[in-house]
Image 1 (cartoon, rainbow, N blue to C red):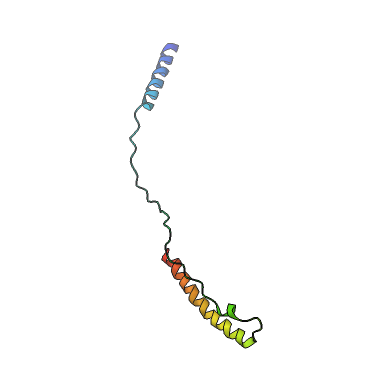
Image 2: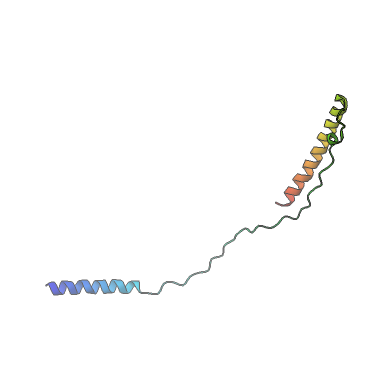
Length: 90
């Protein structure tokens, strides 16, 4: 009885291990889309000479306010140019 049981177990183990020896399926190619960084070639706008930078040290309050209002419009234009350059790169 003991011999037939061991023979039976050896047979099952050998068939089980033989199943692991089969050739695996060949690898299938898979297409993958990967984003690639591209350098931006948009021109960088030149920084303007702002009105407040040209004020002399002892300027009066009215001249300073006039220059600050002018600089506000200059900055808005400069920021619009910068945003256009950034949006060109996206």
